[in-house]
Image (spheres, rainbow, N blue to C red):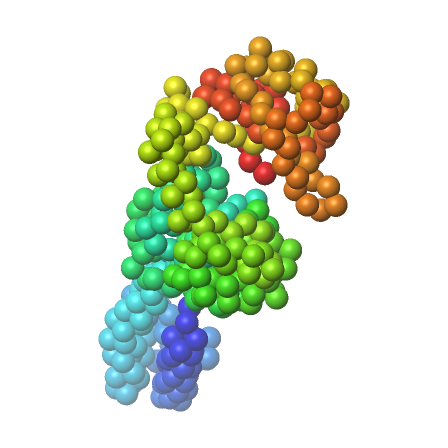
Length: 351
């Protein structure tokens, strides 16, 4: 509940208590000296007040003096205002809680999720792919109008939305940023993205950051600023366009492979972590290649190994390379192959 509203409620309650306290004091002075009075003590006066305000009216405590009954009328008619005030405040609290939940101010417990800073049509395309792949996403946007649209398109167990200025680092804690797997900076222009990465890394230096660039020449600049992955939109689109011109079949396959496979017959490139219980840990790359192909109809064509804190990609490595626990295997598969691999690896794809 907002501060000003809370203060107004406290002041209102204080005034009501002061007025009722004064009326009870006067009522007790008027009634306690009368021979037929049933209100002789403070307890009697409070009991009468509660009976009247709650409209119970047991009749065991009634004022007998003229001015005592006038105070009784005040209690009786003011009960409507008290009920209206209580119902109004309950409705206000419920509305506030609903609004806070919609705006994400209650926070999320997502872990290993993707945080997207900024919302636009491109960001929505990214979220669609991530949600289809089973990833949880937290979106930070200062565009109030987009909040309702995001809630309409996605379930709250898939996408959490926070209405906030991205530069408000206190509110960024609501998206559980420290537990995120990666942060996608989806702001308006390259300069704004660069400034934002420099500033946010002062607060969260250990996170992975990814941006898409309009100017591909800025890749080195973003890398020096601490950006993990800087992707040039024009570079990717130009390569794909050129491929469509001189090798269209390769281009069609490439476009399918870099997107999430929605249909069972579609193929996709996926990355799996080799955990301790993985049967391929300790196996030579060549043997793993043929075993995976035979058992799951999946093609292994790459391996990622983390050495000295950096990720090293081995594309179609030498046959004698031994697969280690902690490596990532990059494979080509359809939905059937994915289902079979999940049973073997006992883990979902992705880092």
